[in-house]
Image (cartoon, rainbow, N blue to C red; front, side, top):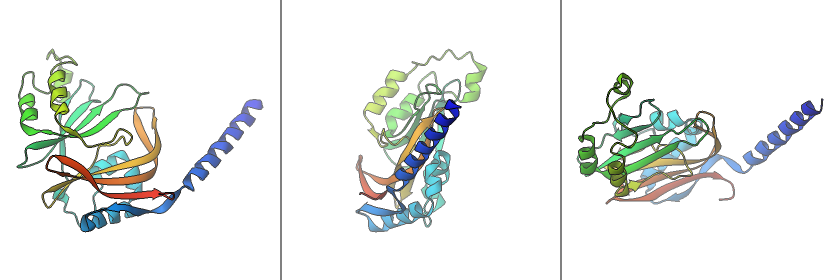
Length: 234
């Protein structure tokens, strides 16, 4: 009987906490920062319209796109390397006629630890040379066959060196790959901040979107051009 009462009280407290937390947020975001009016207005309309998609990792990264922005403007990514389980991977964005590459890093450690999800801009020649170096990166099916002799540390120092010369676009407190858009030959990266937590399976549960930031890459420098916030206090 005591345990049932305890569970009931705990559920009530949790419910009140969630309600109180939701009172801190706006139903519709507001623009808190904008230095490129047309681009920011385009992203703002998309953010305002489709908050639910922003919460879902796969939807936000793979499907979400502002209206009026052509489908081909969204940078497509393909996996170039994976570990033997398929949980850890490197994905490469399709970027033409530039001296850089955009990559996603996905590092899974275990079901009860946060997953590393990062977006990077790296030197194209350095990454291309590394990909062409034996042993070559393997897809999942090749890993399963075995017999390749590749270890976890294979080419890891060289890859780390390539990253050290690059730019990490994503923020550690916003665990998501960043959708990337090529608009008028300028690259824009969209990140989000959430009120959420890591859950079993090393997945991030985004309960409420707090902020969305759009960053622009220019002359090998990254800087914010738009910010949209749901926080009442901001």
